[in-house]
Image (tube, rainbow, N blue to C red; front, side, top):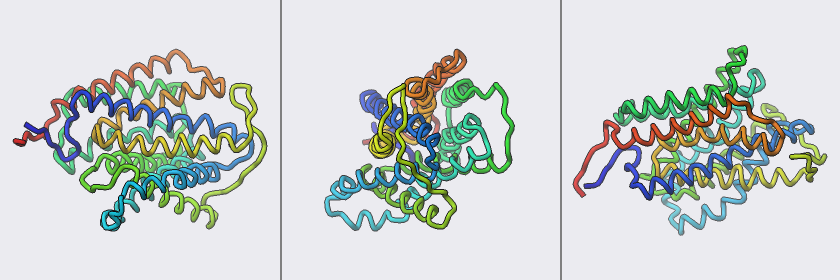
Length: 321
């Protein structure tokens, strides 16, 4: 028997283990961006300039590999051009632009909390679009992970909500959910490297256009920045932002979503918030509190619950091989 769904086949244990490892690699890589960017912003860089360099340099790095992965199948790229455009505009440029717009009105904690409701949005989308009704374990795991996220982001200290900021954060959530849904779709035939390259190129161009028209402020500085009491040249974090937090993270994220499916991959990605707290501790000396550590454990427990729930999800059809 072969297990089939509209999202992705329920992974075999070895494939699932590999997928989770790759998803964690993507999450840890993504999470490094905040700790790397923070001292640069303090040094005078604008958020728009940091994001543009990050996405643009990643596009340059991944593009040759994405073209090579096509193996001359240009018709495959032409057929999926609308999908690549949506991926680049919503999942790459849109999510980045909307998040940085949100933090102009909200504190980072609540902005992240709203954006990271994306896994719940993915579950609802797969249910409404493909009839993949989540099981009890999936719902319970989502609830536990959500509670852990509240602790990790330390939102119980209290914060005020700005209507415009909430709207931008919700838009960022849509971009994040789009990332997981499109990344998990292997029916297009597009290699992960090609999808990542196309999305990064489209996203980089879109961010550049926003900068040229003045919507996204662009300001750069060449002053040295400091991490963990070590001073480094300004170009070092830029190189890491492009190579590790964008090129590696997007490619690994797409590959993981292909192995795990959009629902499970999106919940494993919640570990990005936990990793972000740890990176801030290591590089910026921002020590996480006890509640944040407890929250990290709850997020991991929730991911385990979602994984177990995937095995019994309603809507999975058994089709003879």
